Image (cartoon, rainbow, N blue to C red; front, side, top):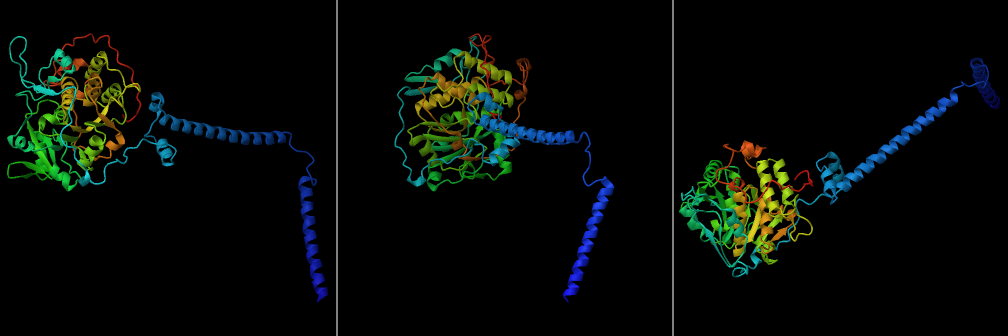
Length: 500
């Protein structure tokens, strides 16, 4: 047994040895020797070249990665920088910014944020009486249009034929004042008798407006039973919008002839006072105290909004808690009216040369761009929500604000800060954060986009002797100004936001 195993083992070893000899022999035959006698002359250079190329690729890749990292860090820094030039370089709509934001590497300003409102509308105490004013105590309004210099009566205008001297005098405050404030007799915007009688009982008002058939009423949500009984929800409409609403939603008519869409009472303004629908919308928005003279408190929201916070909680948060009488949100992007004007021109919100003329008048009259040295948080509001007590001073401010909108462009955000400036700090208001403003409502799209031919005008020559020119509003832009505007150079504007 052992001899057979030994014989088998020896056979295997012999076979392995033979194979090894064969391999050595084949190598000797092919190469002539076990080791090559001589390498090619360029062999060392090829090795060096290959190693150098690999190193070059690695170094180049590392440098590119460093450059990309530096660019990303600069992008993050510029997007969060307070320097206007750097902020303007940031493209927040880019895929890079979106990816970085998803990774949590950048912080965007909050679109919505919690509002520190009270917990229960039923427990909100309502102040007794009205807030008194120390500066202006008696305010009355001009309701008859003036006779022209040649003795003939011009066609009455809703805003009146206010002269430059009357405008200047209106900013000089005294205890008793009489000012233009729209609603000139036979100037348009008349209410039906049934609506006049209805609004007389309204002390607390949530007001909105739809003009030229751009929207339908959106029903408020989260409204307490107490607020439903306390507030009048008044939707101001023109005849075209009333027809559009009637055709698209259910309108109920009560026993007195009043028209309702859900909680909203439709209030018709007959004979629109302006050619421009956007200017017509400023009547109920700014002159709420004139439309509803018995109201003590009002909350204005634009027609495309759905209110989602109880109105009593809004009054408590923005007026009563801080003892304010007027509250409005700050604009999301702009603090200077000149920035806002530039954005209006880019977005074609009105004729660009008329916006420039509007701003030249303000700059000539001393309105400086907003800066940290100013006492106001911003000169530009988000005007879609206005919360106010109808005090004498607030009513005066609303009249003066409306007069500017009537005289110049219908872009009311351009005029708000100017009127604040002209009143020299005597008008007190609370400007709250924009993220809270966005938490008060849900924004719905218009049923159609507004477009007016005047928005595409690039030169004044296109408006002169043209049907594009408004006939009942913005006449201050066509009335000779008592000052030399030719030398006025508007301040440079740095675009601080791509969205603005």
